[in-house]
Image: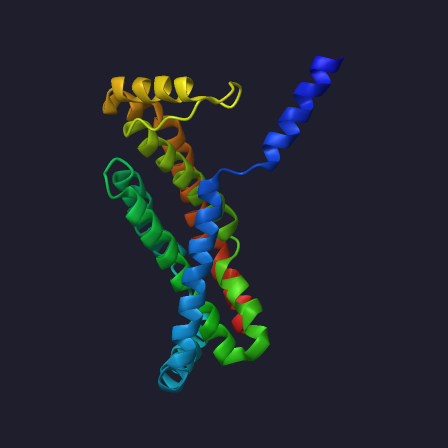
Length: 227
């Protein structure tokens, strides 16, 4: 019983520990969000009128016209697929770290602008508007991109020979050197092929999120903006 209990305790403890890449992602995203909110606040006097006009136009279109859900779905697929493929592309280059930083800050910056605009137009209630703009697709986009970043970072470390010993083995200089040598000995094509199932899983999550954005998010916005 003791070995089983010890194993379960180890698993519980390991589940509570998130990879460091997730903490970096969150910090950079929050930094970008703060920058977006700050910029919108500094430019609020010049942006209020055009944003209000755009908001009223959107409200009228949602209440009077039938929305082409398929077109919105295709537009979402095009945008998300571009971001997704760029993540995987830069993961096999030497500039992965810089692109990853830029991607997280840019994503946070765009969300910060949207949040600030919603608050600018509706006050504190704008926070609820912002949430409605993100749901339900964000429930799939967030885990999809978290997984994609983790897998891309893992692939990049493997390609550069910076393999960490498996979690079940104790760490040490000899083991770290051995896994680094193993990473360099395996070809790039073979390493990339090993990531193919994870690539497809992330892609399926993103595709499902695009479906939610095209066919579920718009009815929610219509309900929010027209009542």
